[in-house]
Image 1 (tube, helix red, strand yellow):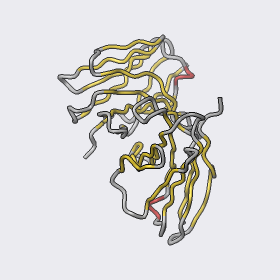
Image 2 (cartoon, each protein chain N blue to C red; image 1 turned 90 degrees about the vertical axis):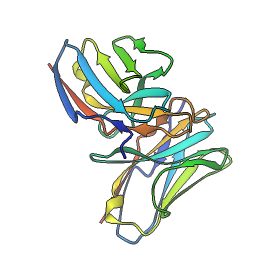
Image 3 (cartoon, each protein chain N blue to C red; image 1 turned 45 degrees about the vertical axis):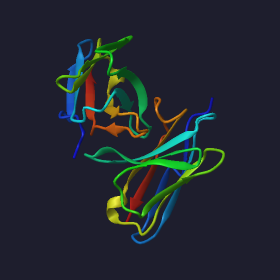
Image 4 (tube, each protein chain N blue to C red; image 1 turned 180 degrees about the vertical axis):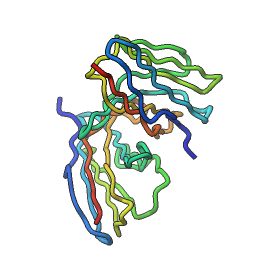
Length: 111
Length: 112
């Protein structure tokens, strides 16, 4: 049972435009969510997180939105840059020291 | 500050063999988690250790085991390797396990 789902395996966006990556979850006990970015041959690197007590968190070009009633979160990247091309994973935890990751979305930013 | 170090980076084994992977966490981080990444499956949680104790375990068979040493370094072992064990094995460390995870570059295992 995939508790965290990223239904879009890939996404292409023009440089300078907005990239929106989506993530859905099924476990209502999740209270902390994170986004990671992964380049080939490297480990995932942390991008941004959000607690369930918030509905938005911003860090520079990256904004994460959380809709608890829909059990949905999204990552917005504005403006998108070619260096943002990578695989993006969302992850969730309910404080059990176990993070559940989605299957990832491959973002390609076209110059 | 040195990051999370995983060794070896690449290895090839044959079915039936066993393998041990090593992870050195960031200095001061006491929690170490292990994940398996395969195409289409994302990152699957294997187990998490804190102060030499396994606090949580994923849904993997008993062939997958791990341990943590007093200096927080961790090892995972896979016995009786199967073709399906071919994957990227990622180790992550954090201060307590309930914080942001910092990942190593991974150990890519190929089973022939």
